Image (cartoon, rainbow, N blue to C red; front, side, top):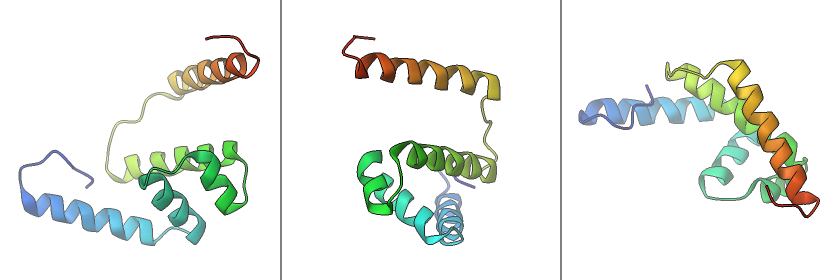
Length: 102
């Protein structure tokens, strides 16, 4: 499906078509979110545009990433490893927010 590193142009075209079909099947807000993210917008500006908190933007991006990975038949890291990574990121942002260096 979403196979970006293939030499066969037919597979690349089919992969792009599949990605387009998947995105067009999403709700409008998710399409806007992904389009803005792919264009390089930060989570905060996406949240302002959609009227939702930055944390919600991040969780929706993550959920959509899981959906796309599953559709592309890619391995998804274990939930425990993801949980540990999320905890580490939260601690990092908390310490930066309080003026400390991580």
